[in-house]
Image (cartoon, rainbow, N blue to C red; front, side, top):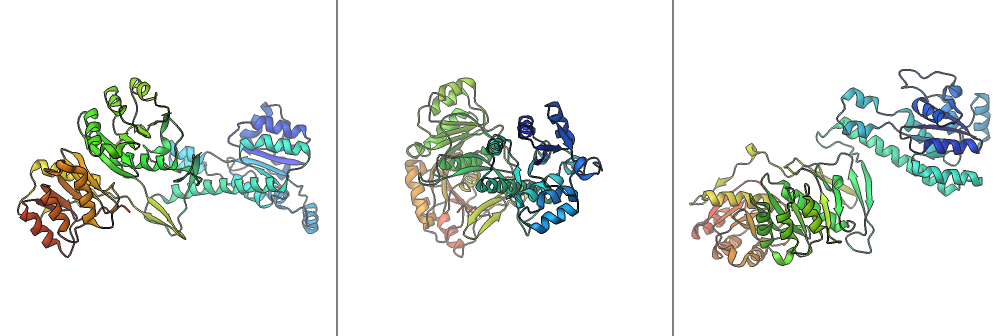
Length: 505
């Protein structure tokens, strides 16, 4: 029996090859792997002994040869294949253990194009595909974690068909993931390609999905953004659930909006509290005041390192999760007492361009760019008799940045750069206004209002005016814009049209 062993990841390869040798297998290898096996005491032979041809072109061509691929692809159950192999002097290869050049790692460390191209493996994927195609006759091993099982089964004299098939499927997944990473690098981020190739790898199995009877897992993007949950360091608490990840991701996206110290409190994927303040503890207190009842059992995100003073404030309320760029050791010690509180450090948090938005639908995938406008693209204009005061204008822009993180139809009331009330996810915009006003209570008076889309009727504007809201920012574009403006004027409210919609379905 003959095996080709050629791996970049050399973990466990020495004992694996010695195990094969102990079972009277011949082991063939190339380059660095051959040297590593020799140092491990394995009697390894060169691939050149199979091909009768030296490695050429700086090692670019080693295994691309009929005697290698004929030995892998030849079907043992077909007499004509066996006869042709014998005629051509091709001996069977019964096991291929290969993993590939570190393409992803090379890209991740910012290598130049020439080095990246040299780390695109050609011979390895070709052997893996060939072996996986012919899995009834050829064992294919891509994961060092499988070495022990394979050796044990070989020692018993037989590897079951279902194991061979599982290993073959794993090999094709591995190669597909590798090729997707190469395709993503070479095509870049420009536009939407005709054929979209996605590349993700599993970080963890989750406790369950949205509901306990649903299974779930967390997969990381090929090039995860920083900061992101995929790159976060877990410092304490229970294992992440599907819903935890959704809420923490929404919270992180919300605080990324602001360069100033900010705190977001998220419940069921909506911001029930969000505030900006020079003092982080005060930002948290103001965020909590937005809806202290709904905050219970939610998650908290900060865009500044968590200090002890802020941790003491957070410690007074029950939350499922918390994330921050980093945590002061005393703050971590205080909150770490709560064994179920998930604590994540995500690294420096700053506004970013985000990536493509992906959403699965029946039969396909929706893809869109991020909801971001450059300053020169954003031209708000006052449409009422009264323009907003500087304070109102500051609060309007705050509400406008928050509203895009609320489910449509979305209404945000804000004052002093803090959310005072929020209405979300209603089929009717006026109902969202009613909910936001009810949440705000007396604090609605003197607040400003941000709406993610235009008012189709003036009724929402009228409700806001009656409650004492002083200014509104909305996209405009309704057939009844004039009526909405007239209603705002009747309450001496300032109204600003942005020309930009922020739907979040």
